[in-house]
Length: 207
Image 1 (cartoon, rainbow, N blue to C red):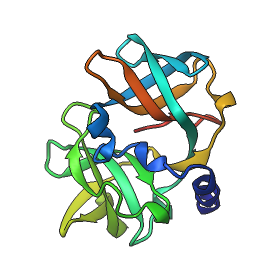
Image 2: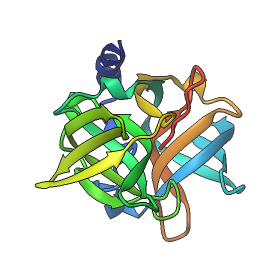
Image 3: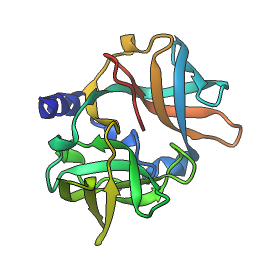
Image 4: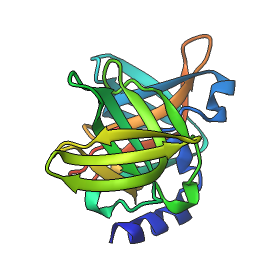
């Protein structure tokens, strides 16, 4: 079922790669920023968000801006060769533990590939790549992600959010809705975004 959702989403969301991949050309237009929080108000092309840090900021929505949502998925949905983005953090006993897992549509395979710093939690990273292996055993659940000739094994604890993209509309951008926005900040501190990811049907963006 979740793959049907992805296919429908692709038709409406051709630029969805801007959601969680900082290694895109966005940085050429300013400093890449990610905003997580809840909507205060949407007025015209200005989205007012109360961030998770407690600030209230305005985000200018660029011409042709789009909105998408997320839908719940399961670790068992991931198959070898699928393209995923996994935010993780180093564990005290070694290795990495997932904070969230995003399953990308196949059309986006290869976009933003790599492993780089992320700001979901302190010292977290985002790893985008194809799944080399997805296993369950007595030691828990582990996904091996391959990127640029390298591999990274990431443990996915029970309860870790696993999502894929889903359709959403401007009507979903209502007060108190949870959002994730990847945008650009100019030299004056103004933030502009091309896309907003909003929580719907009880599923919130975990990125």
